[in-house]
Length: 591
Image (cartoon, rainbow, N blue to C red; front, side, top):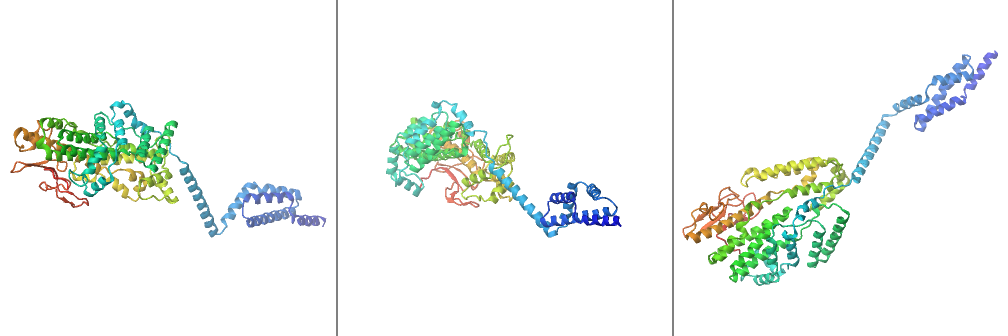
């Protein structure tokens, strides 16, 4: 009876769990890391478990201390128990809660990863390692200054008086420079007199063997500053002064500048000087100074040939434009005054650059275009030290906005899409070189080869592709279409040879009192080689009519022989007006 009473007392005591088991319960509950309501349930379940265990063990005659010890030992590792309880509770949660939780976790993870990726991209900075400007200038700086044309051309440009407004208006209205007695002639004479020191200065410059222009150094920016000051362009002068200060600073601290930052303000004046040489020739010819008139054209032609040595394609294109202008005027001069030339005059003609300059040199130098791309890449991509790296979206978007007439979308979405989709640095360069080689192989074909029309197709296809135009956005943006530029060089070479042929034909008539029956009769005594029509691959078309006069022409860009017609038309597939044939002789005066 007493034992039974004692057992009942201890069972009653078990209703209030001993401190050690309460402490264990709290530690397990804390380790479960559940929501508050779930922790309450776990606490209640554990307390119930311990209470039932105490009652059961006490009824088997154990003391309270022994019961607590047994329950503690049977309970096991509290960390493992807490983990199992947590898993069980999580599995028991509603499906909608699980979906919400994983959605939230995924969203937060995506935001964190995207943020970290964007931060990584934002912190990425270019580390250019090749100073292409210094590399470009190195061979030029090795040439003694007295063998470089640029120092004299620099002074000519700085002292050159630009075309007067009235004369420029006449030129734009008529489309050609005035002849004696035409509207604008008096202004033309005055303009040439204002610049009477320029032609001799340019003549001395073009006698030197090297062009010798130095790009992007402190002297380059000093020239631009002086150029702006001479033109009294106040705002422009401020800009150039800032660039001069920047260039001086860069030169001091050794910063690398990009090729794309180079400006060439002298090119516009070179074209104007070439036009002035044409007017100077017309003035002298009008005064019967025929040798001097031809010399003026020879100086202009020499200026064009010097620009062929320029590093940039724009310099070279200005050069061939000047050469084409001068050869056209040379043929006009010969048509007007050929019968009046003395032996001394002819000696000047035959020793001039049109007869001595190798036609093989009239071709583009395109290594610079590759270098421009490589240089731009190192300012738009990071460098991991092994020739690779990722694109810097901020740099790319800034660059693309500066090179396109339409501003690029610089939204965060576009920022990340550029980075996510664009090829890395090494792959971008590899693809550019691959496309360059493809286009170069096709571009080297004759103009009349149908395959040549496909020369730019690889780059056009890339730019039109919905994925590749993003993966290779730098290439789609920068790869130049050099088909027309290449054609301009070929045209200039044909003009050069056609003018040589005209001179040879006139000399042949002087010796034989008639023109030859074919161009083949001119070689090799009067002409080193027979000029070919770049649009047919055959010799230029040459005919002598019943009166003994000859016609010399190219079938031109429509690839059709129109009988030597210079009538203007728009050929099928083109939107540009052009002559049916390029007629070199007889020369029609511009209207």
